Length: 445
Image (cartoon, rainbow, N blue to C red):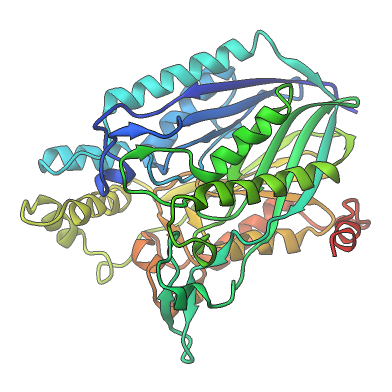
């Protein structure tokens, strides 16, 4: 058994009045329903420190993602490979892409990010992390629990008889006809990984796959229903630090169960909250036997000139007659296309009985399900929305099916590379199952 320590930190990273939201495509900040936060932990005493941090931002891309990891690594006295930062992906929240913002400024397009605000958020979060190192708590056990989440997630890609996308079920789907289609492929399970000292819980980290928006575009900043569920759990047990990560939700929204009515935010919050409480009820703990970080750097590449023309996007972002949405999306594409190397990190934190897989972009839920199927003997948690530079990461067949997501996939099909890398990181299946997933499923029938 390992005896480690954990420090916890939180920083307010809410944008100021007038700041762009969702890359400048929707109404800027005119108020705040609730704050946006950077929420994280530092794990100490088991090799170099490990940092896990979730930001209530829409995306953190390219150099912005690298800078977050560099600054937190320096604050924690560790290496960048051991720092894992993810966006939760709320949309009434900023997109941080430093290179895209430079391109926007050069072309006098509508701004997407206040760079001074970005630096303030880095500084506040780093200072909070540093302060946490002076008040760490001992941990020696890891807890694992599963909870069913009902009537939240639905697949947004609805295919016709020819296997092509006929409808896209957005986060707030107004059409009853589209809402009434079956849920489709989702992961209905919320996973809660926790750290304990003996019988005393210290930290709970929740993982679930859905776009976390009930409604947005009104200029009112909010962590939305997933962030609100986390805070509701925090209010239940102030002594247990709560975190939330969004899993592979590139093709998952709450659209089947949400028409965008404002009262649905609280309803969806409570359904996520119930999944959290159910997972806690069946949590069991095991000794922490290891805390290893494995990282693979893979090159995703860029779409072909025929699909994403460099010349066309340079022309688009420079055209003052074009909409700010088209100009700013062109800037995001250019930030990826002009990146020196289209490489991203995929990592795994191995805790013995449990592993946390950290993925880039808006990965499709198929990658999460595949990871869990690879290691049924492990409690596998998946966080997507790391480096958002590549945009959506669909399955290979999704490019042929069409629909919205492939238009926002800045890298070409990479399913084989991603699956083989995930398999390598998770390692071979153990000869004996250690996680009683079957017992859990029987209990909840």
